[in-house]
Image (cartoon, rainbow, N blue to C red):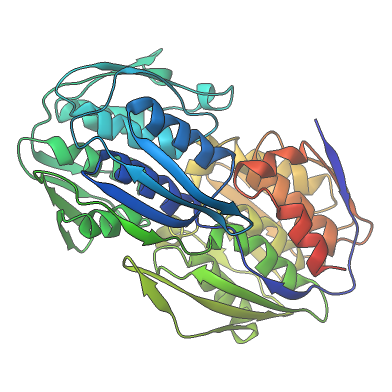
Length: 433
């Protein structure tokens, strides 16, 4: 386990090109594998999670050629095996909840074969029934350990068309169901109570699939095949959010974030910062588009903040960035309250408990609730030691907390940041030099 210290900085300045979007990279790799023909992905994320996906699609029978690898990610080609050509076997998903849930959907409708999906110790403790149960209702044959946990065994079976109404908005669960619909006997319709990220829908449309979005409902009609992708992956706003928050909180900051994804279903963190009074400190350049995904530049400056209450529809649009709200609340004037975020308890760790325990140890006035937390702003945090708990988001939160603290923070288990952002420490230090 690695312990890394982050000391307070006088300012946070410079230019940042964040790593490629993890959600889009996962989906691009998977759809390229199940497509007919050769897909091209430019600037695909090169991190532990996406390497797990690369290994998985090769195990399933895809041929992957890496044309170039560098600081901007991987440029690669994928020769797919088609919608029904996945080779049976055991798949190690590593730490990736996205990978295991999306594979549950993609493999459910295979005409034959059996797959055992397993991962690391964190995955073994994460419930999968929220994705498995609706898939089983559509005809999938899925068995989870103790009815809920990995290893997950998927046996190819006939998927029926139909409608699924989700009680909790989740892009992973929604995507698993839509992907199962690719091999269904008829259209599959999924509705959710709030809008979650829509990368799967955009990418399926790019592969020639008939996708109809009607408010909070999405319908996929099964195609005869998937057309190959040609996609340039934008920067990951979930990764960039940690630098953005550092720039908001550190004095005399001026940060340019280049080429970051600005898909409206992912920019909830920018909406939260606007609600907290930092709207004038963030300027958006005009967005470009690739494969239906918007990307652009952000200019970020230091800002004073006010406390807010965050819940409802904002939660699924900000689910990966919500740990940062605890830190923002420490610096805000008044009380900051997070609710409707119980899903944070079943991420790579219990992120509600992790944020509250971690920031409390740094001097924050923060209280845990059933589905979130309450923070009383005191103008900052002192510092201390924070345990990442094997969770990349908590490792990154501890690092940013150190930069804006009074005394510095030591993050234990900092190596967890490699899961999504291998160069996170390097980038932070280059901007705070």
